[in-house]
Image (cartoon, rainbow, N blue to C red; front, side):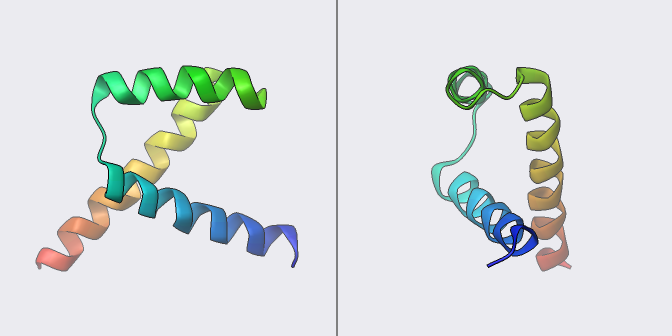
Length: 66
């Protein structure tokens, strides 16, 4: 499996987990801080990625409603 496919699977998995668990500002901030430390990616970069994922989820929600 190439790295592009791994990234596609990871993105789908992240979206599914976010939708399943739900997101609150406190939970998000706590989680980003913990994950950042454990995987060695900056908080800013994780927040940027999270923003992209959340926008996609919101767009999908409204697309289904139309």
